[in-house]
Length: 408
Ligand code: IYT
Ligand code: CU
Ligand code: CU
Image 1 (cartoon, rainbow, N blue to C red):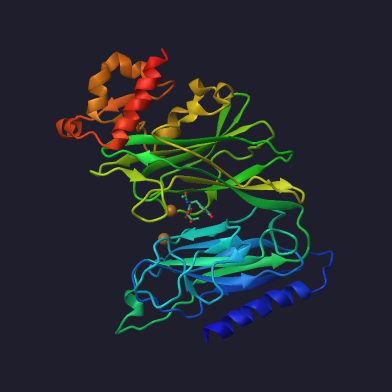
Image 2 (cartoon, rainbow, N blue to C red; image 1 turned 120 degrees about the horizontal axis):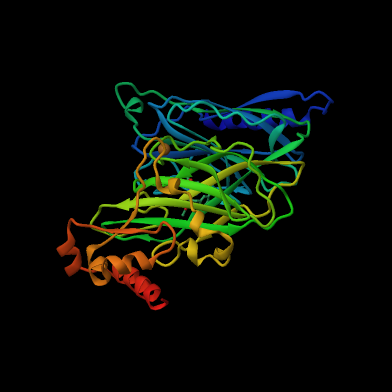
């Protein structure tokens, strides 16, 4: 059953691509749906793949077919090679041993996100004349769709239902005047126990192509409070997007319309993370780890997209925006105050460090420690415990601060 559905899907895509191209864009709808799956373990992530054709196809629209009671999120990836040949397969961040499905990564190589849906969010509309190019000579040889089944009650007795959630894509063979792409900003790093830290990343945009960002997506696990992304042009910070990562993690319209990203500009993002746990949390791939991601969806006028597709920097406790090689061009005094404000609220979420560090340097020192809006607050709770119990990461944070102080 499942194999046949996939086979039909592949035939369908092949059929569309074989049609002769005409002047008027001829659009087709392609269903990319789960083949009546029945995951039995909560938090199962299932993937299916579809081969793209040898001639380019332009995806000009996405419509989700899902219901938030069943599918928590859907991600559409472009891959050079899919994570498995068996359909469907378990492609979760922590593959479940008890799963009925074969496990594997989403993509074996060349992963990039093309579309995201989550929790009954409305469908994303691409701007006029914009399409994602897949197949042909592009890096997208396969499309892979991942569906997150958070609760599996409907699949168990007595209901025993099956699911066919997915996406309907609107495609055409007619070349689109504008091409869409996705650029990912992220960090590595550590969020020390009982602290609030900024995970920051910055990169030069150094390509001879102008990007028009029109949508953005944020991604953290549970410790993210707010994620914001910017383009800095001649020392001026412009917000591409800012979101509470506890809201559905889909693509939202850019918060500043009409922005451009040009050669020589700096792209920057910050995740404000709060760790109230008794253990340090690192960036990593499982749900027990954290992530700090800011995705920019853009279009270009023409057929060329950015060759650079991502930017990752180390993050806390050693790397902040002021460590960037071109920090002098960032105008750190102009970091928007809102960078660490959750949309719809008005309080700046400041970095907080364990009392132990604060005690060592006191008020004056704290103010000297970090530039711009890097004001730190000392934690009042757990102060004594933490003081007696400096973890390795606190020690690292301390070393960093000491080093800063020595430079004055
Ligand atoms: C460590 C981390 O930040 N992982 C992210 C970013 C990432 C995206 C892709 C990493 C790799 C990729 O191929 I595409 I390697 C991460 O895993 N983000 C998740 C999805 O896996 C994409 C997310 O929902 O944004
Ligand atoms: Cu999900
Ligand atoms: Cu993640």
